[in-house]
View 1 (tube, rainbow, N blue to C red):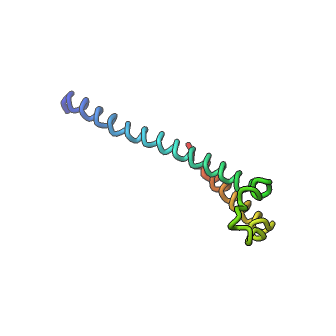
View 2 (spheres, rainbow, N blue to C red):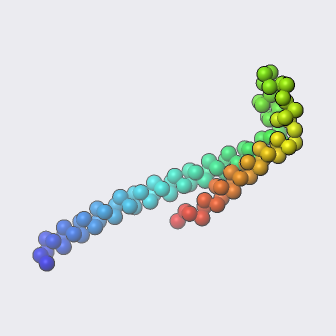
View 3 (cartoon, helix red, strand yellow):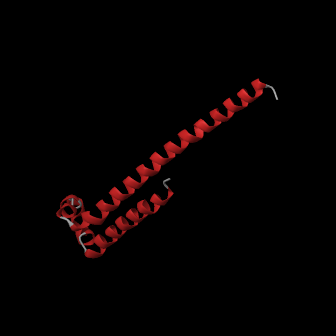
Length: 98
């Protein structure tokens, strides 16, 4: 083996390792962003139906006939359940961060 061949092969292996490292960092950031978004949306969906904000912002004049649906505890509980699912999705994804 010639000395120039070892230099060429070592440069090729270094260049092939760089994109994998950069891809790993980009992947890690996207996973962290996904986790934060899931937890934030989940907390909003968990808490918002039980505050005054739900009654004020969800009840425009064209929905006044069906206000009994979205103001019922069953609908509020269903929305809070979706919030719990979102939080669970975010927290379960934390196991993939390394």
